[in-house]
Amino acid sequence: MIRKIFVLTMLFFLLSCANNLRVNEFMYPASSCPGFFSLEDTSSLGELKLGYSLSSPPAVLGNLAFFGTNQKRVVVVDLLSGEIVRRFWFGTTITVSPSVSDSFIVVAGKGDWNQLSAYSLLDGRRLWEKEAEMPVVSSRIVDEDVFVLLRNGKLFHISMSDGKIMRKLKFDGLFTGAPVYTEKSLVVYSVSGDVYSVSTAPEMEIRSKAKLASRLSGNAILLDSLIVFPVESGHLLFLDKNLNQVKQISLPSGSSWSFPVAVVEYNNLFFVSTRDGGILAMNFAGDVLWQDSFDDVFLYPVAVFDDFVLAGGARGDLYNIDINTGELIWEKRIFSPIVGQPFGFCGRVFVPTESGQIFLLPGFGSSE
Image (cartoon, rainbow, N blue to C red; front, side, top):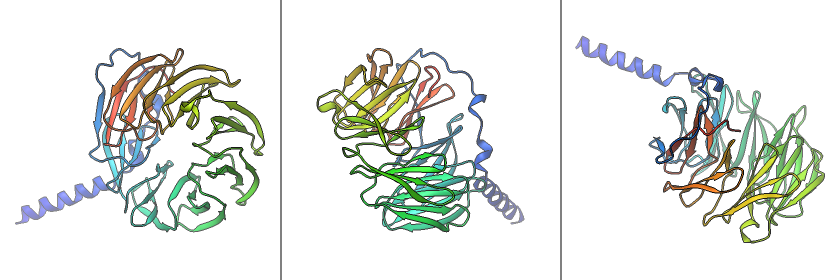
């Protein structure tokens, strides 16, 4: 009897320790990784099976990847070992990429209600939880606070420590794109093309406003001091920090280029993917270097490396494209749509899919 009590006590102790492992204990700088190596074999892809289906693009912090799942959990994976090092329980399906800092994680999702929760990465504690009136579009941790944008245009500045709402603003329109964050300011934009520049310190207030010539078709990106917007008319619009349009680039004519969903900048080149299966490379002057069209649907940005561009479609195919010529190097069937942008770490490229399978490719050269 005494032995049984001892065994149960030790088991409880070990489980408690495992549940309280600090996530940051598993973190390693990328500089500790072996160097990237040349591609030698693509006959098969490596694979990690999480055991959970993915519902949102992952967030990556150092060697840790945070995957939102349909099973109401955030699964934290050590990219060096491929092992799950922690699970954060959440009350509903996670629909937005988690926001992560060295100390905190903020998770948002939608089910029977719109939930927003914050956790400590140091001990795994849930710090606070809120019910949002509308689905969360994006959250971003800045220092000891988090900025949260709802689909109905409400922007909240929330204290990470206690969940207290410090300030809030309301914009007109429907919002689906992640804001662009710069030093002490952020830019939010509605589907209809209304753009707002908002100061975040010392007060949260609207600095300037602009109206784009076309509806938004994808997320904006920050390029040095310019903000680049892909719009439904098949253009890239460049605005400065005061929201003055300073440049416009036209995509090629044709149905494949009328709805750009994502833009990636790499070595002063733009790589654009469209909803109707188009991928192209162009320079800042607007010259198209190459363009491809696939029988697929692209919903996420391509991943750009030194020698190649990797794109995953909504129909479960993966495309490896030569960065210089646009030639298709290979196409592989992975049987599940990708979730988010593929990413590289420590000599490997990781491709997350809806099924919860994370496909691994050998490194191809240093990545962005």
